[in-house]
Length: 247
Image (tube, rainbow, N blue to C red; front, side, top):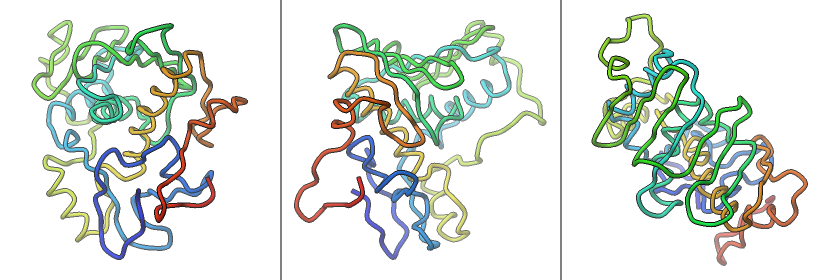
C-alpha cells in the first residue's frame, strides 16, 4: 500500500493491490506522481519503459506504420497480476490509455486466457497470445517483448522514422531517469498513476474471469456500471494498521 512519505519513493509492483486501491475516493488519487500539495515524487518500477525495443515499438505505432491500430494481444508468462502489469503497461502506453482503462471486459466461458478488453476508441485488447505485446493494425503487425522486436511485413521496421516523428518520453535507463527527476523535480517516465492503471487492468481481468460475464467499467470513476456484485470485488478489506478511508 502506498503512503505519503517525506522522501521520493518507488513503490514495488504491483502498486495497488486492488482495482481501486490507489484512489482513496473517486477523483482523489493517492498514488499520483506527486503527493497532494507537495513536490515529493512517486514512481512505479517499469524497467521495460527504458528498453529501446518497447520505445521503438510505441513510436512506430504512433507514426502509423501499421495503419490504424485495431487489436492488441498480450501474452503473459506467469501470474496475471504479477507479470501482467509489465505487459499491459506497454500496451496501454501504445494505446495512449496509460492514464485510463478499458470500458468493457468480456471473459471466455471457460479457461484462463482469451479475455477481451474494449476501450472507448473501439480498440480491443486480448489477454493471451505470443509473449509480450502484439499490435495488429490495418496495414501490418508489430510484435515486441524483452528479446525481440519484429513486424509483418518486415519493411515496417526497416525504414527509420523521420526526425519529425513523434517520440516517447526520452529515457534509456529507468534508474537514471528516476535520479534525474529527483534532482529536476520533473515527472518520471512512469508515474505512480500509470503503474496503478496497468495493475488495474490485471485486477479487472481477474474479476472478469471470476464472474464469467461481460462487465462495463467506468475508468474515470473506477467502478463497474450498475453492477453491485462486481463492485464488491473492486477492493478488499485491508489488514489492521493499513486501513484507508473513502473507498
